[in-house]
Image (cartoon, rainbow over all chains, first blue to last red; front, top):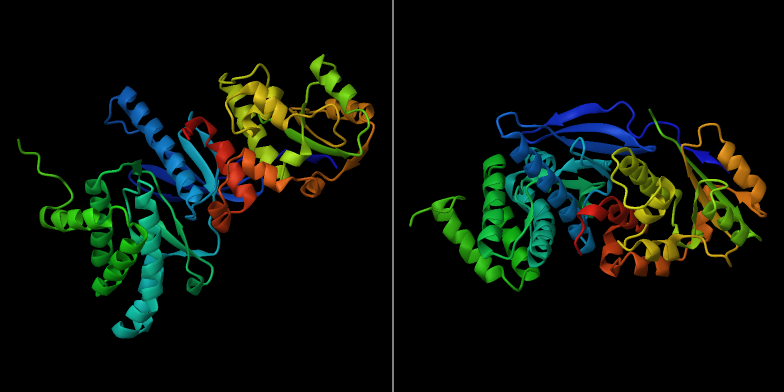
Length: 234
Length: 166
């Protein structure tokens, strides 16, 4: 049969969220639910710098999404990249909540010991994912509990990592250490009493990033003392 | 101005060579794909969408939008290799036809007249898919398929072709 897709690729995009770097629209791509991530122009930057930064970030985002998938980490499928309007069209992860929402939900309904026990398997899974990412030199750059989605029943631990807008490929323990530090800050500042949860992540991380975990964890300790930015002296 | 993409699948085709020659000499403009390399019509849509987009931006690598569809479908940057792997061969008995911007449907009806074979639902392409070969050509590791459907893995590769340095 002749199968014609006469509808335009993006029907009625609806603004969903706006961040500092991009706007997220909900739409459809040839009948599939999709998210359009459009990076907007920053007027305070020189136009040519803005253009090259935006192009660079789109490329590294798409590349990281694919690299993660190739290593067995769930990420949204990219349908189309439009460099002209700086947009990425990607799969909408349906029936999902953020890890942030899930932790808040568990903590609101259980006492802290039970909550810690319920969250433990999730911590192991997140640690495994980060270990695999780092052992393949993928640094996410913005690890927060909002950038991790749980698809379907949370007990299934189907974790999807999103927002690779600040990702890069680096084989330096410094970058990986900062990545973990950002996550630690994000977890401890959004969720009270999650020291154990982060420790679970870290323990699991060590098992999956055998090559460099010792070095990275040492860096993490160093970064904890001085903060994310390296001192630029000398 | 919106573009359109039309797909058609023919099975038990007797005159693949003749059909191909008609495209080569310009009797009608279409992309003729090897159904064994297609796992879902959506795979073709994504490639065609990209080809049409590149055509509008005048950034095509190949000379027309239909050859660009074939090239976009392929993971390699080698044009003749893409044609060999994804294009119709003379000895094939099934073909997936893609036509871009066939607004009045005249190209598709001309093709329907020319092809000696039976028209089937484009979705039936799943019965002709050679999964193992596709996995090899798109270089999809087994561990990837644990978390990703074959179609998603292929689509990700097609849409990230220009940013890929593997």
